[in-house]
Image (cartoon, rainbow, N blue to C red; front, side, top):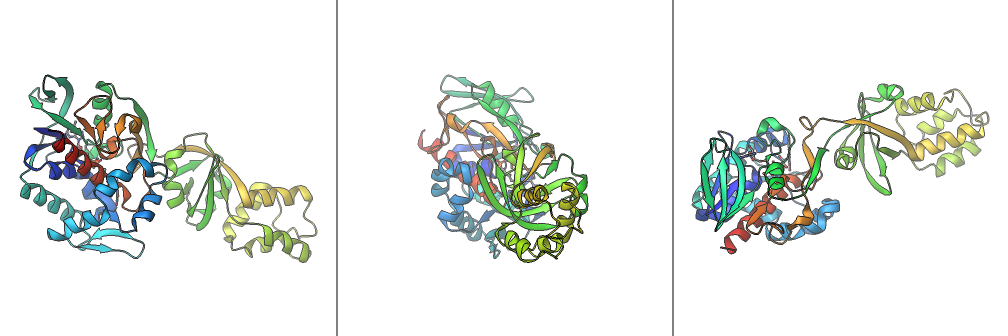
Length: 390
Ligand SMILES: Cc1cc2nc3c(=O)[nH]c(=O)nc-3n(C[C@H](O)[C@H](O)[C@H](O)COP(=O)(O)OP(=O)(O)OC[C@H]3O[C@@H](n4cnc5c(N)ncnc54)[C@H](O)[C@@H]3O)c2cc1C
């Protein structure tokens, strides 16, 4: 018998793959609480990009997640849902939703498939500990009951949005069995920036920009908020940041600006900056922040001011004050170290017969349906591998 801990998308996928051989244990009265709130209740369940583009979006985790994705890809998940009565809608940006836009339809379809394959779901079963025992494992529940298993799949989620049931149990269970845990930190989170007062008035402005963290550069949409930055380029890379991290934002390339400064000595510098499609409020805030008068003409601009301004426009430095708390960030980066799990099977390299899937693993993915797809893909691979090993 294979015990699967956690009834989110990863655990459901594992249980579907295990069929009659699996029992899915979920601590809540119902499975899939986080799935139900995903995509604001509409559930952006996958992304319909080509294999190559999908994998490229997984960034640093691309190579590790590739076997799981190829084993159960985006088309496989869309087909599974459609064949079982939950047609999908692919938005023009590639995001996949249920046709009804109701997360509940995704969950009920997965539960139907689980039932059809002969799987068992036990709700209200909270796993407290897992220990290695003769012939497999002994799983102890919160009420003290013990269950024996040949294999165990840990799919109890991460540590973000604890009230959905995912409170870091995966990490505690894995650590107690000797696994190293990457300390969880918020991911898919907006950031607060130190000394933000000058930019407070820019809240709501969205623009395309480059984000540099250390030596890495990312491009995407950036949103100014009342306390700092958000928007896809920040959310998707927030797992790389922590308080005190210095980030650099590249607002515009100044090649044309430098030329127009020389060609238009009588024009106000700020109007030349506006000419580069930088929103007015951002340009005004930057001038205030840099201590440059917004009335100064190109001829009057001092060399030191010119350098400061160009430097800021091309590579403005900001320092992270804080990220959202784990409770309000949509995801976390942390969990079972990928080095200790075989990516071709999802089996622990430390404890044979123990498998991990979904957000229990230390990866962080961008928004766009990648997280649910990869929870499903890793869960399915863990399930197939566990069955094949019996
Ligand atoms: C507000 C919000 C919106 C999101 N929207 C999207 C989106 O649109 N698209 C997308 O791709 N991703 C989205 N995500 C992320 C996505 O929901 C997760 O990546 C995904 O649910 C992870 O699946 P999982 O199965 O690994 O973990 P979870 O979904 O967290 O499931 C883990 C399950 O394990 C159970 N559990 C925990 N501990 C125990 C225990 N000790 N014993 C038994 N059971 C236990 C939990 O109750 C839970 O049901 C969103 C997340 C949030 C918070």
